Length: 172
Ligand SMILES: Cc1cc2nc3c(=O)[nH]c(=O)nc-3n(C[C@H](O)[C@H](O)[C@H](O)COP(=O)(O)O)c2cc1C
Image (cartoon, rainbow, N blue to C red):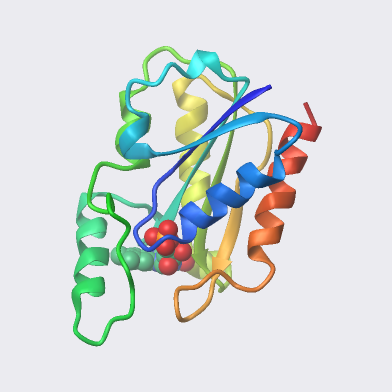
């Protein structure tokens, strides 16, 4: 089974979740993990499952303006946030918009603050909606992995991401 995990990440949390999801699939699937900025032009029909994730920004998916806000926050003198090398490149929103006539299985995840989804929003819900609109069939409910006030994944979330990844391939 071939799996493509496409992620966007400003500070690394969503990348860590994406990598953990792929680790959870080890031994069960051949998994490729790529940043959304590098996924443009990839033939999604070559994969049995596409997993897509991004950070929750302003209650939904990131966009150019929120990425800029994230970069500015990291550049503040008192910030200990480290930007991913391609943080300000195009992300999941642009990659999804670039897809043409796709089909097959897909699932969506996000990272977000550890508060009620009513207050945080969930990028994964919009990603899932866009995946479905593009032509994919969703094989799991959108999932969130939570970060703490220091913008670090909460204890146990990396393991939970691996378990979620494993369940995605075990169920197929
Ligand atoms: C500009 C900006 C807006 C954000 N808005 C939200 C939000 O509305 N809800 C939320 O739960 N988290 C929000 N966050 C927090 C991020 O979702 C969270 O830190 C995420 O794990 C970052 O993932 P990354 O490290 O992969 O970039 C926001 C972060 C930034 C930089």
